[in-house]
Image (cartoon, each protein chain N blue to C red):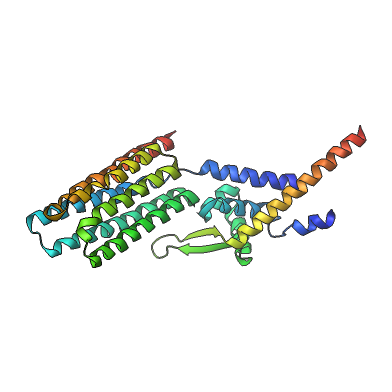
Amino acid sequence: MSDFKFAVINPLLHSELRLKIMVALDSLKSADFMYLCQITDSTRGNVSTQITTLKEAGYIDVSKSGGLGRFSRTTCSITSKGREALRAYEEGLRNMFAQEVPAQDEQQVINQ
Amino acid sequence: MTTTEELDIINSTRSEVMGRKELTGENLFLAWGYPTAIVLLLEFAALMIWNEDWCMWLWAGIPLIGTPLMIYFLNEDYERTHHRTLEANVILMMWIFIGFASCVGGAAMGFAGVFPQCYCAYQGLLVGLGCFMTGIILHFRPKIICGIIASALSTVPLFFQGDLWPWQLLVAAVIVTIALIIPGHLFRQYVKQQRYE
């Protein structure tokens, strides 16, 4: 059981902020930096750091547009690799949850 | 984080993203509808007055006016909402494909020598189907109904052949009004109402 848990925990997604960013991007075609700050309720610095981590892992694509005379806009979108990783992670969590719930019920019965 | 907490984060983030989603693209139908209808009417007038080969170049006015307007409104939407939904992307890709099919089909008809006879029916059918599909994706009934009517009307231009073919342009203008301008205004009103609520 413990081996199974370690196998499904992807360290890149086992962070609240990174998980929120990935889930938000999974539900959209693309989102800009401001949107991700709002949806995760986090500071720009934190979101920026996590975006860099996810980009380096190949989970998201980041593009910058705009330039002279206007603020540049950072747009993020999830990659197929990122989508697959998120699916696998979520499935693993649900499997773990399904195994945890009967174990908890069993413990309650023993306690009673 | 426990398993339950992580699953809660996934579910709550998904719900928040869904809750923040709003309808966009309320000006896109009008951005294409009015230029198309105006160009069709100009084309009709030019053919009635001069009836020369250069009149065919007026068709180029549709993408030349529609494309910059579309890009402008798409950017405006993105600046306001800071995101693009999957549905909006599907609709955009579908209309880009329709525009591409319209150009390629027109060129092929030109080479085959049937351009004036068939093009209006072809374009009307594409626009009607696009309107219908957009309505289905957005669950917006007026677009579905207008798309069906426009698709049905797209057969009418085929009855104007020979010397009567310029009249196809007037029918095409009516089809564009039904498929793009009327549902465009209705959708714009609906989106504004949704935003206000």
